[in-house]
Length: 242
Image (cartoon, rainbow, N blue to C red; front, side, top):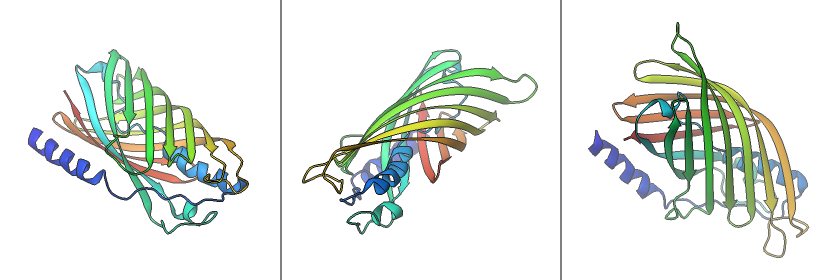
């Protein structure tokens, strides 16, 4: 299983250098809001794991996640671009149980990835309820992140969610709801992204719906997740617990 894990990691590393993001210039206020809806909520931290607290297990967790942001709407804004597909970038994550029902997760984009995005984030999870008569547990999650896109848009995101997880032998299905706030700074000037060349800050709030699945293969796991705001965002993760 370790050999399989290393082979998959090598594939991820090989993919890190492909397809950088392309952003249009000359965005008006309405277009900046739409861009923030996609890049801000799209870059928010994902669970991509079994929400049952890692503090209930020994050791640490390492993972590589692949996240997708739809670019069709952004590509038609402002001066427009030819990027009509989905922007894909990768993050490395680490996690450690702090106590039996509390754990900490951090993630960042690796520097070898030449995609025009730099992002980092963290989550604190607290497992506050586990049913004795059914394999259902509940967790509260606080998270925050920062992202920079081409040095043209700087984004900070904060949020919280309540998540339920049905934990079977090798499968965990999780679902939840939360609130997320994203703040985007759009750089002005002659080389900036705004139409009036004035640096502008936009602030959005949204509820979010979370649905995911975590599949365990010994110490290796694969997770898939959908986050629904005004748009849907998809992500996946390959992880290993030591």
